Structure formats: structure tokens, C-alpha cells
Image (cartoon, rainbow, N blue to C red; front, side, top):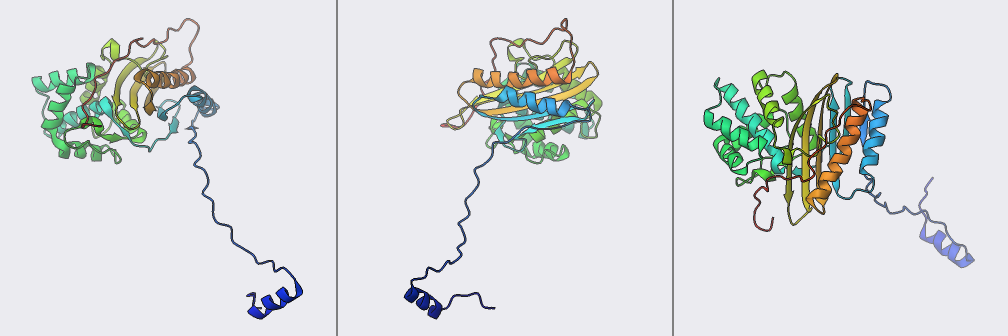
Length: 307
């Protein structure tokens, strides 16, 4: 049967004053982009739902764009939010620089020189930018890319023109890095992993903010933070942390941008961290919780003019 409407039929209908009901195809209306939701899985009953609820609550009414990664080996728990979104790294890339240095030294079967050790210590514990620039230049982007490939950090893009603070990173890759630092693998030697954790455990007090907030005294704390203000997306404020003890072995990455001030971003990160620590590690009323500095600082990394 031919479902097309002929001219003659249209004319007849018009003569009789009959309205033809011609089917039309509605124009597709693009759906509004849904706000990403926290996603959690866990081998421990009820833990995933609790973390999802509490991380979501910690971010309620907070402005800015936040990406979160949580992984606990002991309970096989993972939480993510905007895990594939790219952010300017600021000083968090310094962990990648140190890992590259150690990875390259391992390839050449050598120890770090005294100068390299001094630069690495300043870069991590004090977030020294000059030390970072020297190591970045010494390594070169080719070696840094080589480490990223070995670490399967496939979405991390080194900053160009020597601007290491503009390296593009995401939560997925930062969590891969933290996992390499905290468990035996073929990329980093056991000594290298221990060295990175030792330096991240000795960060000066004014820079020990962010993911350690609310960590119980029963776990060891290792942290590296970063911040950067640019003309677009305001303040980027980030924190990477690894935690071990009380039967748990976990890591937290929080990357943020579009913050009005550095302090605002720090508070957002610490709200998330407190929720994660509380849910992962049971405490008693007598357990002391980590209280971060009330005056957080970081090194202000170089960016191009009008950056």
C-alpha cells in the first residue's frame, strides 16, 4: 500500500474542507548535560553506598569543578567523579617528575647523584619550582613521555615550552601513579617507591593540607599538593595523598578548578577527604584525626603571560 499523499487527494480534501493529519517528525532536542555523579564500588558490603552518599554530601553546595579518585586495596573499593576530565597539573606533576627520574635511573642501573637527591628533596618537601625546572630540563620531555607510557598514564600530556605546571592530567592517571608508588611493580623499584613515599611524608607543615584532612592517627600520611591561578577557570587547587595503616592501604586524588580563591578549593578538597577517611577507617572517640595547617601555602608555578 502506498502511504504517500497524492496531490489529487490533497485537492479533494481541501474542497471538502477536511484537514489532513500529516505525521511530522519532531526535531531532536539535545538533552541537558547531566551533572556527573559519584560512582563507587566495593567488596565490603554497604561501603560503596556510604562513600557515594558522603562524598556527594561533601560536595553539595560547593562551587567549582571537582574530580575525585579513591582506591582502597584492602576492601577493593573504588570511587570516581569526573575521572577522565583534564586539569592543569600545577605542582602535583612533581610526583611524576620524581618517578620519571627514578625510573630512568633504574633503566641505567644507577643511583641518584647527590645533586639529584637534593633537587628531588626540595621539589617534593618544599615544592621548590627551581629544583623542578632543573630536573624537568635534565630529563627532557622524551623521557617523561617514556615513563608515562610505562606507567600507562596515557592521558597525561607534558606541558610544552618548559611549563611543567601546565601538564594535562586526570584523576585516572594520578590514581595509576599513586598505585605504582604504593605496591610492587615492574616500573618502579621497591627502593624508588619507598623514596617517593618518604619524601611525600616529609612535606613541610604549611603544605600539608588537602587529602590528609581528617586522616586518623592510625595511618601514615603522604601528600603532594598544587595550585595555580589563571585567567580561565580561576584557581586550580589539587591534592594527592596515600595512606597506610589500621589494616588499610588507600589513596585519594582530588583535582579542582573554577575556584574563587585558593582557600575555597582547599576547603572543598578537605571536605571530601574527611568523608573518605571517616568511611574507610573506623575510629573511636579517642582516635586523633589529622588537622591540616590553617594557613595552606604552595609554590606558585610559572605560566605564560595572560595565562
